[in-house]
Length: 273
Ligand code: NDP
Image 1 (cartoon, rainbow, N blue to C red):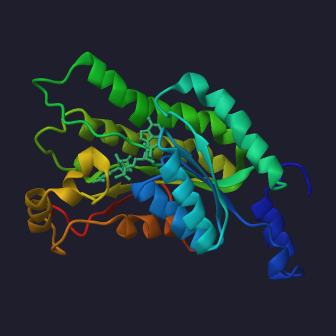
Image 2: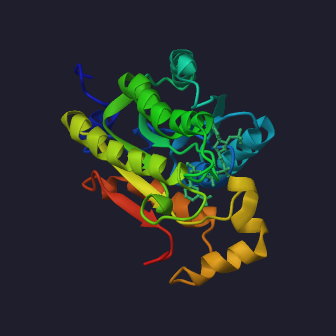
């Protein structure tokens, strides 16, 4: 392969002669893949034959479950621990990613999904400096520095999807830190797209509406009143599910969506429109 030629280019060049079975499978790295939206993304990618390296913070059992489900769905997935709020660990994490890639005979991966996130119910009145730092560390600093650290490991022509929230667009009581942090990652998405265009890496941001996961204590899934309220504010008449979001992220990473770049796609069934 000539220098600076990605696997994607090599695949394209070889496509005219090589049978499909010889095309190297694509590889994704998904943060927060042990549960919720991240897990569904790993499974949707596996159905498309995309292998994943995915991260979890503490829940090893859930991560093992995701890995088993991905294998059943059609492609292996390997779990690595990572706290995306602790940038001091990112170089070591990149070494672990290199080691996992080496096991599969690859030296780079194709798709990065910055999905890991944590809830916050802080208001303008009660939000503390510590909560601001915690949210900033995970939702902006972590996304920025993890992407920066992993960039040398992403194939030219690869793809990045960041995960925001409908709450970056609409204001809701108790989300005065969380919503603006997600708005920041939406702006960052455009800057990433601008800089990474030279490497033909498209970067988009998916903004889910309220999704029934463990997020925020599972409130959308487990509190019938909240679930009903969300449904009443949603044109399609129900709260979202992880299965509503994972296919969109996987789709954005597909070749068909290769010309979509620097876009925010809200996946919310028409929430508060
Ligand atoms: P879940 O709480 O269901 O899952 C969170 C995932 O992120 C888990 O895999 C968890 O790992 C991981 N994680 C949490 N904190 C960290 C951290 N500091 N470092 C690394 N990994 C971490 O959340 P969702 O799937 O619902 O949310 C996924 C993304 O979607 C988040 O960015 C969230 O802000 C966003 N979102 C969610 C909405 C919702 O209503 N659910 C709405 C809009 C956006 P572990 O299992 O080990 O704890």
